[in-house]
Length: 323
Image (cartoon, rainbow, N blue to C red; front, side, top):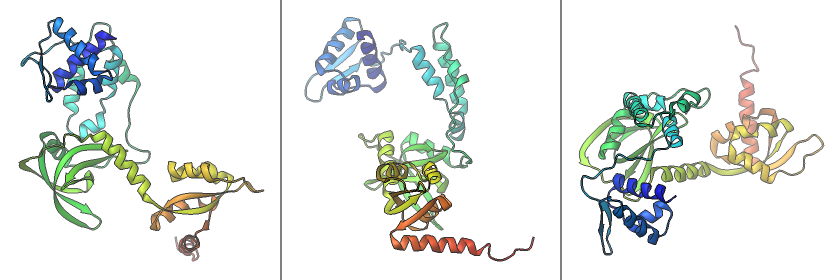
């Protein structure tokens, strides 16, 4: 355990540079006192760790020092082999570099370690069923600006219009086969669908990335807020026994609401429950996915809208069409 922690401390200092004792303690999930003991152990082993005392002090390796010791275990190497997504890498024009990196990883591993077997047994397909990945010709240019930390000027399509915006690119996210750009605009964070970016210009001005911004945490929070914010109304419905088995088609939040609010089934097995719905026509179209196995009971205006939608659908079948 101690050897593993000492190696982790060394790797953190080598990859991140100067770090304070509280930062190291947080990363390693140990006490600050343990960090100081570990630093003493590294120094005793001949590792040139420089310590700056004081309120703004910290630890860093002597300039130019790097260790070739990685401590990479077979399990860790297998995880790295699994991380090479060929589709997204190709879209970012990184496929060749990914292949080269995998070869170097294999060459650096001890004899007998067969990490490549993971890649031959597991394949990650990030695209949903019956969907193709969106072609995003400008994705490499956007990715370069993210990496170089330069401001971007993009022309972005919203509905039938487009407008130019100046943004600070923070990161790219691949969600269910769709690329999104997370960026800073003014004092807020925005999300742009990459396929809606019509033109890209990387500006000369450098972009200073906020020190406290974490892409994964931001995406998890913002995507959940988006999903929950989409449900701006609720409806009381009846579900047939078959409809109950199909409710997952309306998403996990609706499915959870059915499980929480459903009463006892009636003689025909139908359940009465309350579910969240999206406002407008999209919410109605979602309800119609269950067809005759779902009946809207309330609110009354929603029930009327569903009935009107069904009448419009039926109108297409009331006249005989010539073949």
